[in-house]
Image (tube, rainbow, N blue to C red; front, side, top):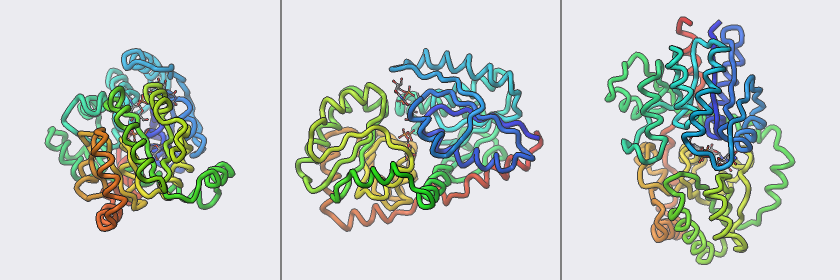
Length: 373
Ligand code: UD1
Ligand code: UDP
């Protein structure tokens, strides 16, 4: 039996790890699995755990309101170290670039445990953007034993950093596996909550918005709100649907600036099933999210990305996403362009998804099966 510890802390880690965890659980004769939630996120993590019906073995319950990176990191280090010492895994699986993933890697390294990094090799090469994620992912790459790279480009990044080629597997991104699994669950057993959500919307086309990055906090979020206000006025036949991240640095300014505007719906973070439904229902998406940029091309939705730097160059190159930063005029101009110029719209919407075909989980499990413990 290979003992595998999964450590996850935030909404996107849970979404992208869920199909992988389910895949390993289906092979419990070979793998002994322990799922540890750090709960760096609480409500937003629980929404995903519930939807995919995952059963955590440990819940460290670490989130505090408005947490600082340093205090969170210190709690993570103590909590995860204890879990590793108790479970004694052969492999520790971490995902992406969150504080949970970076500290879980460091804790594993200190205890000389092998680390498997899912979604390895993403880079902007600017350690301050996204902050602190770019530094987190570079640190994890130095510590990891196995690197599951979503694309050939991310594999090349790792090769350029002298990672041994034999330790890298190109898998596609598990987000596509999660999306297909989510769509299947929604189709087979849609919840009453989804029906209520559908009923709550008017027939108007939807502009879906999310934001949370540290680079957009402060002045950036105010610019974004001004842009959305202007778009709501100019395109009054559209409805802007904005599930707002629970970070007070986002939640407070967004409600202050956008509350009470007729065609802007400020919502709580949506359960994954509601979110993938509203993505499908959208005309276009404006976001600074990483995961949404990877999902949207599979649903043929153009994405305006409110960031200056991106580690997801493949989506820019394929034409599925366009970087617009957080400049008010640029966001308005590119939204106008997507609404008024159908050729441009169709080109973006029709771009091929470079992040895989939903077979990442199978590829990762094959790699793990081929290894000695
Ligand atoms: C974190 C990750 C980021 C990831 C994002 C996904 C780090 C440093 N950042 O950023 O990489 O893209 O999650 O959303 O790891 N909060 C709640 N309830 C929740 C979640 C958050 O109230 O369920 C509030 C809390 O006040 C919390 C704050 O949001 O202190 C910030 O959460 P945190 O995980 O530190 O940062 P994010 O901006 O969410
Ligand atoms: N998502 C969700 N509900 C929402 C907003 C987003 O389920 O209200 C999902 C989305 O489909 C994607 C993931 O959350 O899979 C993205 O998370 P987030 O933007 O918080 O983090 P990032 O991907 O930027 O790290």
